[in-house]
Image 1 (cartoon, rainbow over the protein chains, first blue to last red):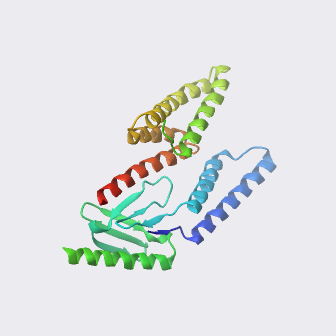
Image 2: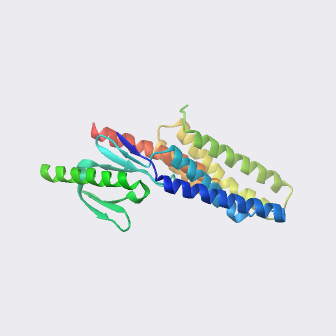
Length: 135
Length: 102
């Protein structure tokens, strides 16, 4: 079983956003004595996202299937290797479109380190080849 | 009694505390806060029903769905409940996928 975490750059960006919003909230509170309420939900959400990404793996390759979940509110997607018929890679958007027997599943590899993304794509291509040979 | 994931307990506790605070405020008020307290009572009751289904019956999928949809009312703090319910639903899906592979 192989697991992947979110890009470190993205984690750093959300940390910077948390600090910036925190400073804005603090400055506003010091200046006016009030809390800037409309920004508080965004602040909570960013902190929640940051810790969720730190704790959880976003992509897992199991023995028979792959599973991914890039945000805490997204449902986990499961794709069995044997159901993947074809795949298309959009290098601009960094999205792999997995075409399975029943549906098309978008796997956003842009959220993972570039080296890992290449490794994932080559692994998936191998799976597709194997499946096509088996058919 | 089943042991659920911690996020569910935390979310339910927060929703109940929220209802309690607004309820206390609303009891002294005749206007908007009283209306808000009554309005919040509905999703909190549905939340409790979802929790009971999760805790005391074997139909976890229904319980998690009920809990999740009623937690959406409390966004952003309700996101804790939504994340907890999603986790339960993901576990159920994973179990079914693993069983299919066996």
